[in-house]
Length: 121
Image (cartoon, rainbow, N blue to C red; front, side):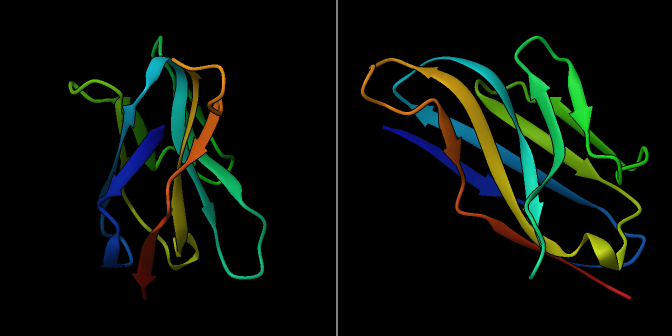
């Protein structure tokens, strides 16, 4: 069993900042990558940012330098610093983990329950 615990969502004004955090716990052998996807109503889920265990980041095309994903000091934790937020960033943000579980019966991909990010104009 693996769980992803998300924190940091909320309501901010346009131009403001938020920091999202995701911690993976449970029967994990190793983590390949962790990151964040988002989904707005009526839209497809899209990549926001992800980072490999080696520290290589990847960002969605819309980020344009505004967001930074990083590995936290805590084990199996990633942070997403979001600056210069725009109303179009409003969505439910989902943590994602690609990992190798301890037990073969467990999954390799996990999703958090989602945290709401709302940016007002």
